[in-house]
Image (cartoon, rainbow, N blue to C red; front, side, top):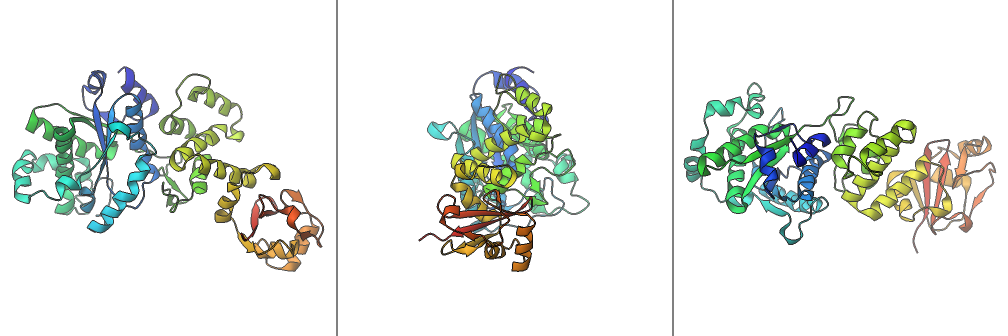
Length: 421
């Protein structure tokens, strides 16, 4: 392999590909698609693999199509599932499609037709059953379908005819996009290989044209856990479901054993050069405790998903919680982030004792405990240790006009916020 496919393999995007794909990509710009079923209101981190693959293909001059599964989402893909998904209503599927559309624009340039967004509900919902079975179903044999991994894995636990038909619907998508947009490449995760090759076969049988498929590996962590989850909870791209702070922290907490592969997959940095991945990994390996590679990746991915202002705010908030920070140089937005992540107490005016403030933000359970913690030197106001049990907080303690950061010990934080007038 040479050129683009070699680059994709180095980055970790190639698990399997149809024969001749390297030569096909080298012939000139191709149109490539990936499907996303709207099973949730937001994309998850697991969806970043195909999105970044589309991003890499677009950067190399090819045209991506994001295919929203407004139609297939009503059926449910059995791939990688031990049991049948609960069926979505048409209303829920349509609402999820709309919420996911905006997230796609963070990864792909849709201006001037450089990328397209389509919804397979446009051709699947109006399709007539008898016509579909005559024109599409006749090209599939049961014995071949039973050999597909997505079907074979579910035969013992049970597979409904609804899910069994999913392969035909996805193959029909490929045929429609070939005929409508001259799309000649479909990409996805390795669990989609059976569905993708079914589409490749259908296009060849009906049109005589050889089209292609490429699948990326399903990512697991070095510890063996499924990628994209933190403390057994999925990480979403929607800030209303997973806060930008928690999103950023997920990347900061990347295992040292995973960081190089994650940089290749989720960063746009090249391999070589002063800002390349190899140079960054050399810095990281000299002192892994600084987590330079993790912080670099966290900033880059958070900015792409949530924007630069949100990234800067969560980085500043993280600095408050985990570093020796300068109270006078904190980004104001950091306090809005902290207010959602640590115990926070609103006050009408900054005229209360430190003892009462510690109780208000629930760093202590009682005033007597607050006094004891202060006397023992375990309490900090805006990074400054405070040992005066009679300390009164006032306007001079406010950061960014309305915030006081309190700390007990090394890790327990609270935020006092003056309510805006």
